[in-house]
Image (cartoon, rainbow, N blue to C red; front, side, top):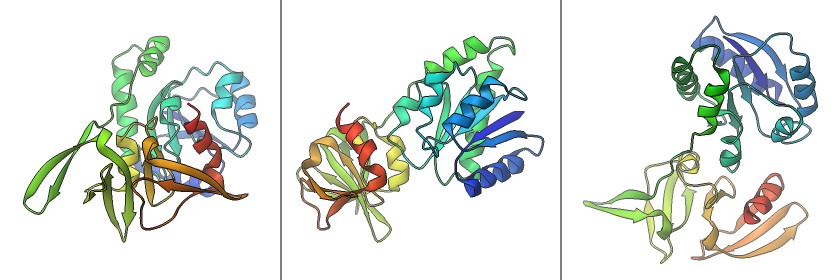
Length: 252
């Protein structure tokens, strides 16, 4: 299988190549490309045809989606990114899967197996049909969570959740009426389980619903400060690298 890696961090690209070869030593990495500009140039004159592309979303010169605006890219893609808020957009452009960094061996293997399973459903010459099927995929999101508190089990509807946050390696769910309940998922996992149109990963500690955001303040040139309801004990900030995605999310 021929694979192309589009990733602007050298160490991350090398680690991904290592994981690919651990999964299957026969995989051939055609190239590792760091930017939108170089990716467009590569696809215009490819040295070989990739069967699968691993693509980071934030490249050194722009978001990877600019590639699709410049060329008609007819190849399945597995996105690898530290940002969960582009999931919906990714599934509109040939996406097989969406892996959050740091990518682990199990997640990588599952994504490749998913690609192989889809490919087996179609003839090798029927790439258009395969890509059409990929484009029709719609991620399924949780509508409720089961919570265990002591000996009690209860269900919390997603519409009742104001935000999730982590504290001392424990993840909590906070309801609109200010109930704070432990939940057995990490924030990274939760970010893939809830609809990114409705929830935003503000930082390492908070995953927010839109109705929970009461006020937004410009804190400095590189930060926004959020007032949430119910109010958390700690202050909540949006860092420089997430300000643009956050504004895009607010403006959907």
